[in-house]
Length: 492
Image (cartoon, rainbow, N blue to C red; front, side):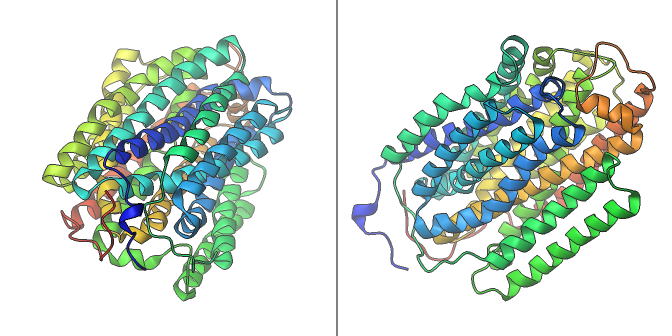
C-alpha cells in the first residue's frame, strides 16, 4: 500500500478534533451502559410481562451483538474508511435508542437494544484506531487516557442521571438522552473527521468466521442463562455450552485457513499485542459483572435502595478511575506501560478481595475503600495497556487491531455476566432469583435467603480477584516497549 500523500495529512490541530469526537462517542456508550444497568430492576418490574430471561438479555443481547460484529466492522473500516463507519455507528445507535424508548414488551426492548448494539459496534471498532491515526506514538497513551475520562463521566452521569430519570420520569426517559447527543455527534463526525489511515479495498468479509463465532458465543450464553433460570436441565444446558465451545474451536480452525480472516491470528505473533490482549480479556472477565451484581445487591433485598441511591454508592468507582486514567496514560508514555498495567491489576484485585467480606447491609463508608481501589486499578490498567497494544501493530491494521481488542473486552464482559447469573442461580432458589431480576418489593420475599445471596455475591467477587491476578502473567511477560511497528506512514 502506498503512503498517504501530503494533501491527505491533517493539520496538527486535527488530533484534538479526533480526540474530542471519539471522546463524545465513548461518553455516549458509557452513559448508555450504566444508565440501563441502574434502571434494570425498575424495567423488570414496570415493563409488562417481562421475564427474568428478558431482563438478563437486555444486557446480554447488547453485549453479544457488539462482540459479534466488532471484528467485521473493523475490517469494513479498514476497507471503506474509519470515519464513514464511525459516523454510521452514531446514526444507528441514535435510531436504536429511539426505538428502545418505544418498547411495549421485554422482547421488544431486547431486540431494539440489539439494534443499538450494531451502532455501538461501529463506534467501538473505530474510536481507538481514529485516535491512534491522529496522535504520534509518544502522545497516544495520554490521548487514550484523556479519552478514558469520557468513560468515567458517562459512567457517573449514567448512574446518577439514570437514577434521577428512572425515579421521576420512568425508565423510558433513560433512552431519550442519547437522541440529541447522537444527532449532534453524527453531524459533527461527518463534517470534521478525516480519513488518515491507509485503506485496503481488497478486504473481504469472512462469512464462515462470522457465523461460527456468532453461533459459538451465542450458544454458550444461551446455555448458561437457560441453565441459570431452570429453562433447561443440567444435561441440556451443559450440552448447549459444549456445542458453543466446539463452534468456537471450529472458528479458530477456519480463521487459520482463511485468506482474509475476521480474527487476524497473525497479529498474535506480535508479543506486545498478545500479552496486552490476553490481559485485556481476563480483566474484562473479572470486571464485566461487577456493576450488574452490585446494582442488584443495593436495590434488592434486604437494602431496597432507590435507583438514585444505588448510583451514588457506585460513584467512587468512576471517580477514582477519572483521577488515575489520564495520569497513568501520560506517565506510561514517558516510563513505559507494563508497570502501570500490572499495578492496576493488583490494585483492583485487592478491591475485589475486600468485597468478599461485605455483609447484607454494609455501610457506604465501609464499601468505599473497595470501590475506590477497583476504579483506581481500572484507571491504572486500561489506557497504558491499550496504548501499547495499538502502537505495536502496523498503521493499516489498526482498524482490525482495535476491533480485536474491543471484541475481547465485550466477549469477556458478556461471558462474565452469564457466569455471574449462573453463580447466583446456584446460590439461590429459582423463585428468589426471579424475584430479584424482575424487581423486588419493599420487603424480603418468602423463602429468600439473604445468607445464600451474599454467598453467591462473595463467590463472584472472589473469582474476579483471581482472574485479575492471573492477568498479571501475560502483562509481565510481554516486552516493556513494543519497538517500532512495521513500516507505515506517519499520520500526525
